Image (cartoon, rainbow over all chains, first blue to last red; front, side, top):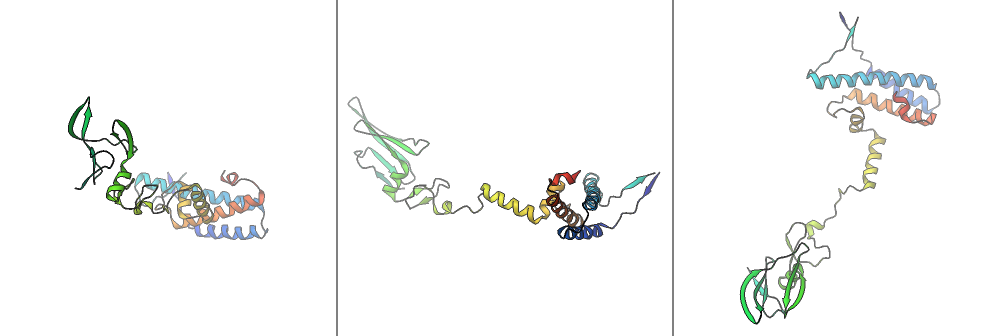
Length: 70
Length: 163
């Protein structure tokens, strides 16, 4: 059984948050642990996007969806 | 084609305007042998000729310039009429603006890394530039900026955030 997961459309949101974090870092208003967590989250998103690109290249499909095994 | 006798060789040698030097006759054991044959030019463009049993060497380009007022370009083999040490014509002498000197390469790389261009992001993610979507590019750019700032604050390498 596989369950289709909704593709989160929060890339733009994450980008905005990262830029906001950058501004806060410049002003020394941020906890470093929080920044590390944000970087890890964005790393995960980037890796998923990268995997999609590779999958598209291999399968020749224009739209790649990931399914969660239950 | 024009042909001129080379001075001082008793009209034994002549040069043609296409750069061929011909030996017309020679003395061998008191005999005069008349036989036209073309002299070989060595890899440096030097011709060996004999004058009263004395061996001489002369550059073909020098002879051409002396007798016909032009020489052949070392690079493109076209005729040109100026005496230059590097033996190159005007078109070959143009400065190469695209020369890849180590300083220029370093300068370009620094600019690309600082500006975080699409091609830089694509190379970092090991994907083609055409495959890189706008949102992924923007996200990676923002992430890289944060990583750099954080590495600067914590005084650690940026590689520590890739884990």
